[in-house]
Image 1 (cartoon, rainbow, N blue to C red):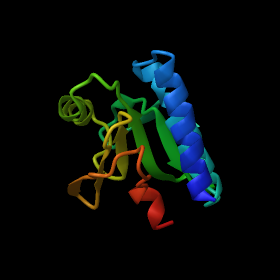
Image 2 (cartoon, rainbow, N blue to C red):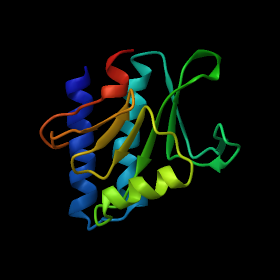
Image 3 (cartoon, rainbow, N blue to C red):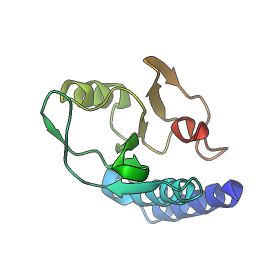
Image 4 (cartoon, helix red, strand yellow):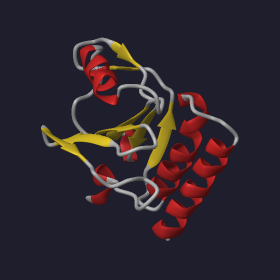
Length: 138
């Protein structure tokens, strides 16, 4: 089932890029659809664009939060433009108080995740296969 979901993502992303879409708002829908569908297979829910307070009391607004039963947060997703310097954008988000665990930064290229306090740069390309580390243990 997940292979079909990834193929759907690849088609949606390709179609958007063929239409000249390069900005975050235009490119986030295909990944959102993929993440939503994968979460459904695990009885989780993707909630998009809601403001939450971090442990320091700062208000943040991730592009998506994966929630389980009892509204518990399982992970976070942040979309970035293809042209953004992803390393700089990640630093900015952490400085702004975004979670530094169980978060995916996605820019349609290799994506980044921080889990268990260890940085991993996943070298897989989205067009070749999908890596969903924070959903893999669910």
